[in-house]
Image (cartoon, rainbow, N blue to C red; front, side):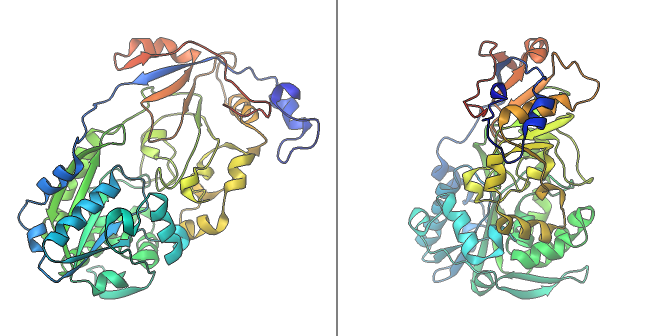
Length: 436
């Protein structure tokens, strides 16, 4: 019992019997490695934004006296404060009046206050971006899509003279297609608030691309959207390129930008492992809590790829996720502290809107990290239990440096993109059985 970090008293989710079952499982030694990806990133964000906005049909579409809505989403996007402020400043230089709206579907608990809190958690405030932030869940219908679905957008955006879509372009974790996460999705689900998210998700992720294209066409052709600013990041979550695209060109150009984004995606450089340990999940990391294109933890059958593994352990939920436990459900094992942070009110609206239940389910909850890792290894099938293949990552965004078990060292040494940067050592647990 004491070896597993358990006190003699009762524990919430792991009693003496559970500890005795898993305590016999040996935990391997680990070593830190560095995975090498392309390092290029933009050195001066303001200069890059200003250069992008030189494209005809973008900033020059803004006229003096106009009120211009800028979208801000619920993802943790590199340099987003400086990007928003740079766009707002340029719009003010044109004699117009920018303001920011939360554009995040049902996130933030599907409330205006919750969405403001999400932005504030990223440091996006009226002071930091230099313009007002107007938050509402009310939407206004602006048309009907070719597929017959009503098209609605944020009330404040509908009242503006123009909208600038600002968002990261990248692979989605629940569907694949010519467009995934990006400007069109921001126009449809971001601007559409809870209503837009619900109407797109009602047909399931198998129909998501068709819905985004159909509804997106209506939004982009409405005359409300002036242009988009698509952001592409490198494998280290740093801004790699910024692309200003006139509204009428977004449908044409976004597929190529998605392919460009996928070119620079990171990966876990092993074909398969027995166990993946994820220190933290959160909405600031991915809409699904962790990026399934990295971890292979897909919630639907409409996307695939990432790491092949038998078991997943999730150890915590980020503070920036504000209790949204999305992603915990794709794990096989988690721990008490993560469960304690799980806020049903902050999480359930997202799942009810998306109609995807797996990410919000509760995995087996154990008292501490040692038990969870041991249980994951023990429940794998047909592996070398004395020498399991295990990868440990902080989260799915930060995979430049990761930990691997000793069984993976030969593969790491054979890969020129991997450098072993530490010594083999036992996992270090505190007196409660949790990893340092």
